[in-house]
Amino acid sequence: MPRVSENRDGSETETLVPKILTTIIGSFPYLAPPTTNSSLKNMFPMKRTVPSLFWLLLLVVFVTTATYCAMVSRGLISIDLKSKILIQDPEFLLNVTLLKHAAIEIGEEQTKQEIQNLLDGNFGSQARHRTFVSWRRFIHHDVDKSSRNVNLPATLRSPLFYRYWMDFRKVLNEWARKKRFQPGIMLDLTRLVKVPVDRHNGLFDTGERRYASCAVVGNSGILLNKDYGGLIDAHDAVIRLNNARVDNFEHKVGKKTTISFVNSNILHLCARREGCFCHPYGANVPIVMYICQAVHFLDYTVCNSSHKAPLLVTDPRFDVLCARIVKYYSLKRFVEKSGKGLEEWGNAHDGAFFHYSSGMQAVMLALGICDKVSIFGFGKSTSARHHYHTNQKAELHLHDYEAEYAFYHDLVDGYKPIPFLLDTFKVPPVVLYQ
Image (cartoon, rainbow, N blue to C red; front, side):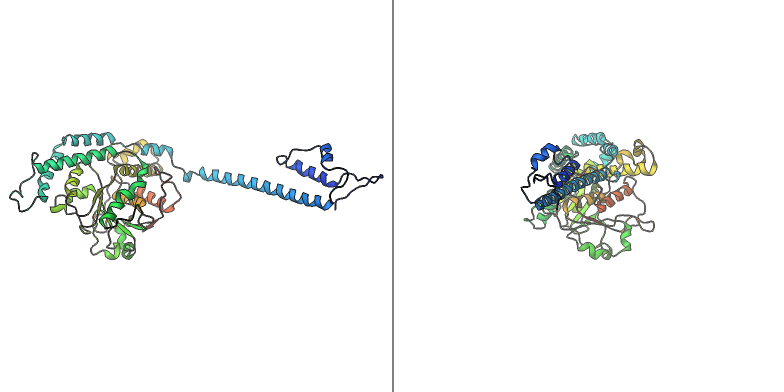
């Protein structure tokens, strides 16, 4: 109970409660303006009008409220500082200089000139001309075999060749027009790839839903060290690369194939076969292909008309995005490992000929069309063959596989930002099996 003094005339003097409140208020100037002694006398008159217990309760409430506000304030500041520290952590920042250099396409002007020459009918070299002549010889494969002219090649002036030529110019011109950087293309991959595949499989009500789970099966010889076949086939969709054999390897790599992902060099070889036969997984398995050379649209134009399953060309905006991501990781690795300047990167990686691998783009495709992604057969071992189905041991120098492996590990990590991807695109969970 607060002490109260009493005057000789019976009136009571000030209680200690207002003095305590004055001290508390002074300790928290941002909660209330300081008051003078005279104002306190006005607030708390000399005559007691309320019980002393009331003042004690008021004091407890006031102190509790003030303490809570102070704790919340300090807590918010602490959270803000932590977030700032996290954002500034170099491990979670993309290098602006590397982003700038990765956005430069060294061979862009050369590619544009090549495309224009093809559109104009100028093949530029004897080698390219021989390719063109060869192409003219085999495009008669879809002519009715009962025809007496079945063995005659299509000539420049024939209606058959003219039809192919016009289709070739149309698809090449459209592809060249779209060839630019547009990271939002990742959000369109379901519509561009999965929807046509679903329709081919008789599924028309899937909308733009993704596959629940996807296995991207690479061709590394390390697959021979494990029996992943059953695990791979258990996925909702399986993407295989560059016509790698599955016969006699089912226990290692599985046998299910939803999408055959190839580069256009593969189709260029297949196009010389009757019916453009390029179906190691069955004629009804859709093929998704990225274009290595613009002239390969000649092969696409012919083969597309004979395919039972969809033959889809990746959107060139998707190609540009993949190229920038791989180059960023390659530049980063080059600087860290060699200690040399960025200007020397081109000499180490064939400059304009540097390219992403088929596997890297297949993984990127899976990120856009799948809710969960599993990666098999990506990596290497000194004791393993380069491809599980061949005796090849050497790697192609136009790819930077180590840089691509760093990219895969960042996908698995799930916390590090991926260069050139929009914040609105959410990278699905990724598991890497080795």
